[in-house]
Amino acid sequence: MAERGSVAEVFLAFLRLGLTSFGGPVAHLGYFRADLVQRRRWIGEEGFADLVALCQFLPGPASSQVGFALGLMRAGPLGGLAAWAGFTLPSAILLVAFARGAPLIAGATGQAVLHGLKLAAVAVVAQAVWGMARSLAPDRPRAAIALAAGGLMAAGGPAVLQIAAIALGAAAGLALCRAAGPVPAGHLPQPVGRAAGIACLAVFTALLLAALSGGGDGLWPLFAAFYRSGALVFGGGHVVLPLLQASVVAPGWVSPGDFLAGYGAAQAVPGPLFTFAAYLGAVAAPGLAGPAVALAGIFLPGLLLVAGALPFRDGLRRRPAAQAAMRGANAAVVGILAAALYDPVWTSAVHRPVDVALAVAGFAALVSGKVPPWAVVALAALAGLLTA
Image (cartoon, one colour):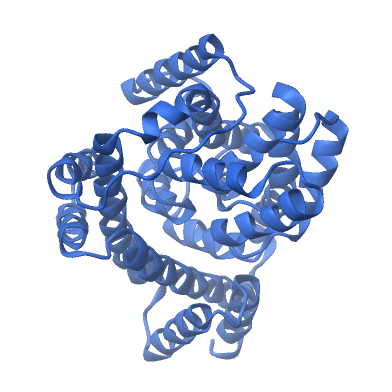
């Protein structure tokens, strides 16, 4: 690790990344590597790879967790918060502005554009399912876990089934997914001591138990809903879709149409996909309190986990059982996301043959790798207008 830097340096570096990093978590990590590893030399290649592996092992938004950890290593706790703020605020502000402006889009023209955004969401989620299935369920045991989790979710029921599907996937992974072997252990600098790490994990656990217990007044139910979602997301940003849908659409805080329109818009902005929470918070509650509470709720668990795990990372990654359980949990989230692709994403957006054609075209463009997600979103909005 290079010498320590300033909080301002960290904020400006990540603000630049937050304004320019399109393409989702994998692309974000590529931007981080080019800027912070190769150009600024904040961390070496091996250390960066180890950090990415740790954050992919934990629940939460991997690219945001990597950014937070890099800021933490560079400039301490305030550096971690500066990295998170710089990377997160640009897309969050854009999505809050979209939420405030969407009701002003009246008439057939506005509805046609919003319908195009919903079709873009279909293409993006389908591409996420495709890519995750290839990487997280590449063999028969993990494919079977994914199918079982998808079947469980398709059967319908309370939102707690998502938690049960992940837990059952982890248990199945312990029994079926040990053959791949543990990931070789490396070494990372430790900016967090063991006592502080334990404190972060204790706060994470206490807040999760409180969030799962239900009840509360004021903005607490909103915070709890987003905290639950952020704490239970394995496998990447798109997996948060079914958790958020159950948390904000089912209670009636956000309509299904507004949910999918915002999800489509989230593909057109840079930065982490989790800032979709800012849009949902803006729709669910007036003023700036809703977006602020939603953002804090969805990001806080992942940040607490990475700060808590850093001191114990080397020992954890040497445990084959932990790796096997995570393989099973990751396969389960493929099935959960596949179920969400059908309901609510497909059922809420695709109503005509032309909708099928546009969704398939968007999916093909994304899978080709030649068209960036923001361009697919823009083209889908235009297509929605032309085919209305």
